[in-house]
Length: 129
Image (cartoon, rainbow, N blue to C red; front, top):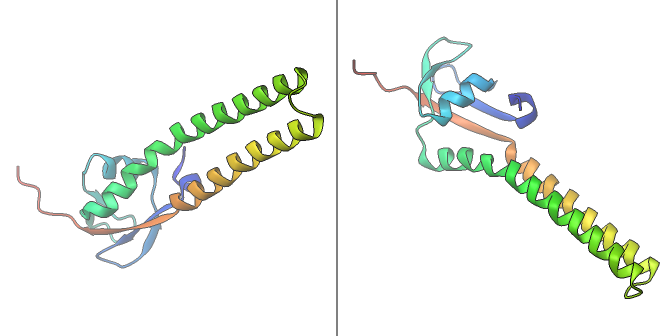
C-alpha cells in the first residue's frame, strides 16, 4: 500500500511544510527512527505518543476489512439459505443482503476517512554514537 493511497502527511518542524510521506518514511516512523525532510534536508521524527498510537492503529485496518468481508459473505449465505428453506421471502432476503453490503461500505468509508491524518514531525534528537 503506498502513501498516496493511505493519505498520511507530515508537517516538518524546521521548514513548516506539509509533505506526503513516502513508504520508507512511514517505515522509519513505525520503528521510531529519524529521517530527513525532503524539503529542508534536516532530520525529523514523530515523538508525540498520541500521534504515534494513532499511526500504529492504522495497521488494524487491513484486518478489519478482511473481517468485514467474512461477515458480509456469511450474512449473504445465511440469508440465501433461509430463503431456500422458506424462512424468508425473496424481498426479505434481498433486504438483508443490501443491509449487509451497506454496513460494509459505511464502515470502510469511516475508516478510510480516519486514515487521512497529518503528523507533526518534531526535530530529531541528537543521535549518540
